[in-house]
Image (cartoon, rainbow, N blue to C red; front, side, top):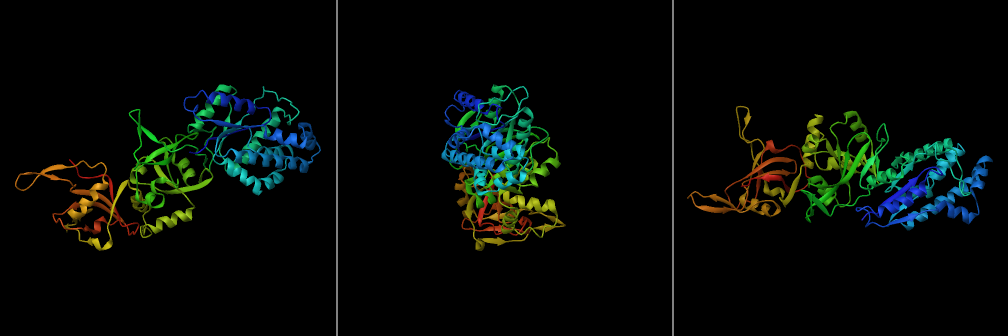
Length: 480
């Protein structure tokens, strides 16, 4: 199971430690979180300063004297200690009252030296810290003017304007690292904790005007072991797989979850049962405008630091404003599409997208049919009409081999033979299929020995060698 890492960030004296302490107490009372034990990562900077025998007064003197080298030397040691602390608890759930990005914000704001901050940012050490934060839920506490900074002699004591400037620098470096953060603006402690809890459960909120582009998301949820049906928890069947699901509700809110995945040819080829999270399903609410959707999909999308891009959609997804993302570069995705079909000859863009979409049709893999068992036959055409449009033939013996793969097929079916006697028919008489670049329906012939499929030109939508497996569309067969 993926651990939950919560990082509370902000300027000095905004209440980070108090919030972490109260979160730990409240989480133990939350019925959904009380079974989860959280470690507390705290006092990292204080530990380093005590070790170096340095106080907040020393740090303020470095700033007043513009002694950036000494200041940076201390901050780099704090970064290193933060990395050690995160690494020690990487397999556990934890709350931390700092992230290590504080060093960049201090240097950027107090010394007004972005170049020096950037040199630390580019270091191998800091890149390790960024990697540690990619799966975390990062929260920034927005300063409040009526809260005065407290001097404990171990920190830089800022005024309100310094707190604001520092916080803006902190946000800048998080964005630079492609890390998503969520801003706590409410002064009420209970509301702050409720805000954090919503994010733990996968409900993300950004301040106006809208979600930052490129979209960067932590995905800390674990795959469901059960799903609900009529509000009753049902244990998931072994053949059910769950895919990461991102729902863009509006320009400020996103919900993440896992959704039962209906198998299709392309996903099963490159990430069987979605075990490696190479594919993600994303859905856009009907009220979102096309310009906003384009901005998200034409950019990269980062999930736990991994880069995803748009790869395609099925026809049903298109109607529901949904599509698939793939963890790879645009070049990799183009290669995947080209490896699974010759679509370059299709010049009409919408038609080309629809043909690629056939690779994503929800269907069940059944038997493999080699090329010598595939027969090309002509369509029946008269007066400009194609009477066999999309209709092929399958041998009865071959059809019987498909039935065991159809989990929901209700058998036996009682039918009447030519002598008006009841007989059992344990096989559908027609299947809606996807086979390589063919789409359509296969009807059974009467030859019990026939183990071929016969396909027509009207069934061929593109040239493909994706697989010799015959796929039957969900509920795509005749039944009682």
